[in-house]
Structure formats: structure tokens, C-alpha cells
Length: 469
Image (tube, rainbow, N blue to C red):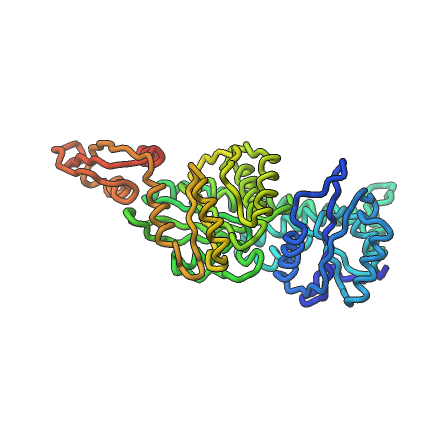
């Protein structure tokens, strides 16, 4: 193998995508939709500027510890690379360091796995200082276990210290030590960022505006919807992970002065564990929201599987109680694929949301009349769930969505009576902005001057915030 094999993914390179489809212990195939998985992998490659020349799925009956694929399968991959003049091989799965090295030696081409590809995308897209730190930490964590490469410089030794000298440390040990030191420094910096973010979050909780968080699978249309509602100019393209850094803007809601709308990073299946850990501080913004708007791409045939991935991550963040019945969800997805769009008349028990969640079924403009009719039928059977069909591109349904968000924010509120000094502008502003002032009258004089008696309708959460002011 050429020791000068490139370490970085070259933009514009011709890439072959290979999805290793694992066969279970009893011979059953994975429940993931192969075509959807291949399309997603191609989308990831496109997001980093690669040219996908072919995408293929290979059934893995018994994963090989050294190469993952069998010898015949490796030969088939090599032939496909030669026929398509592919310079790069993307394995849409997880590879160990040894498997990656051995595949590169056998195929004489650069090989990266799904984790490496997503890290490349995040490294290119991170715009803020925090985002760059998070990506660098994830990348170093990924590389720390991949220094067992074939590069000869890792065999060199440095001189030791002391009277006897000794063998010193090998280059690979020095590299690992440098990586550990750098990771420790980044973690300290991120901890400071986390504390600062926590202070900002505490300040927002005391501010008189509710927070609405947009979440969803990557490329579901969150940023397009965010731009439509706020008039912002957040990057919104038909690319996976078009935006990484969270953005917040004010948006007006019916019956409320305003709310803070937050656009978060898109979720994806098999998100690398390094990135989940690195971006936890960013995703924790979701836990401070008053309402979560789950944006779904209803034009994607795999939308139910994408929903499950989002709910799993929300459960991991503590937003959802982890009560997902995996077998029931798999049965439901199979039924969905049979009829094309979802038969929700037999809802199984799912995770219980700790924060109100509104499902927004986006990309309504891309559906044909039969699909729309099937989805409307499905909506009629979703008791206890709030679902709003919208088109972020055309604006259809957005006004209805804002009205539902406003109603959800004020749901379960009660009328409370408060006596407040007339000079206490912060608490008065809170009641007028976060609640519905029913009555207001003079309440005499107090130690701090004139008093006001205010009757206001507040939810339990807003009452708690008001009492903490």
C-alpha cells in the first residue's frame, strides 16, 4: 500500500458507496430500508462535495474481524471501483481501525466509514467557535483509536531520560499523548462554554418569552421553516446537515407578545457516538424549551424510521421517557411500507413526552393527492397527538402551526391573583408577556410605593418562573 495515501477526503473525488447489510443471528435481515439507507449515504457524500459513481448493498452473513467483508465481496468492490474509476470507498457502517487499514491495503484506495464521513461534514460546516471545538474533540476521539496505521513514522522511538536512557516512547505513544493533551484542553474550553450557555439559559428562563425548539431528522426542512417563520436567512439547502450551529430568533405568536424560536442540528441514524457526546451541550438547548416542534419530511418513504431515530435521541437527552416498544414500531413501519403512507389506527404505546411535542408534517407540497388522502386518514386516528401539515417552502399551514403552538403554550393554565409593586417592571412585563392578564386594579400603598392587584392566567411552568423572579 502507498504510504502517501491521502488522509483527507478530496472534494470532488469519485466515490463508491457500499452499505454492509447485516444478517441477524437467525438469518433475518435488518429492518432498515436498503434503498433509503443508500440514498442517505449518497446524500452524505454529496454534502461533502463528493461525486457518487455507484451505490451498492452487500449482505454480511458473518462479519470478518480483519476486513468486515469476505474475500469475494472485496473482489466485487474492487471490480466496481475499477469500472467506475472510483478513487474513494465509503462504507456506510462502522469500521474498526484494523478493518479500515486492511481494506485500504487490499483495495489500494482510500476507505472511510460512516463516522469518518459525518465528521468530515461537521468539520466543514461548523461556523462558530463552539461548533469547531466540538467537531475537533469528536475528530480527535475518533483518531485516537486509529493510530495503528501502516505509516512507518509511527515506529520511530525518541530517546529516554535518566541515567540508563531506555527505549524512550514510540512515535505512536507520543502522538496519542498529544491527542490526549489536546482533548483535555478542548474539554476544559467546552466546559467553560457549557457554563456560559447555562447562564444564558437561566437568563432566558427568567425572560418573559417562551422557547420553541425545532427538532427533526436532517434535511426535514427545519431551517426552511425557521426562515419562513422568522424572516431569517439561515442556510437552507437540499443537503444533509446544511446547518450545524443552533440559531435563535424572535417570532410572534397569536395571543402572545412573542416567543424565541430555536433551530437545532438535524438528527440522523447511527450518529457517531463521538458527535453525540460532543454536541450534547448544543442539543441540551432542547431540554430548556417550553414546546418542541418535531419537523418530519413526509415526502420521504422512510419517515417513520426517521421519527424513531429522533425520539430515541430525545429520550437520550431526557426529553422523552424511554418507553419505545421496538417490536411494535417495526411492525408499524412494515405496515406503513405496505400501504405507502402509514396506518395509524392501531397506535402502540410510545414514549411519553416530558415537554409538549407538536408534530409538523412538512413538504406537503411534494405529495400527490393519494398520499395526502392517506396521511389525512392517518391523522384522524392519532388521538392525543398534535399534528400539523405544512409546506415550509410555500408557507401553507404555517399560520395554523403558530396558532397551535400558542394554544399549547397556554394549555392547562389557571388564573392567579398577585399583588405587585407598580414599580416592579420586570414582574409586570412577565405577566403581560407570558400570561393573560384578566384584571388589573389598584391595591393601595405598600412599603415600596403604590401596589397593583393583577389577576393573570399562567401555566404551572410559567408560575414557577414567575415566583423565581
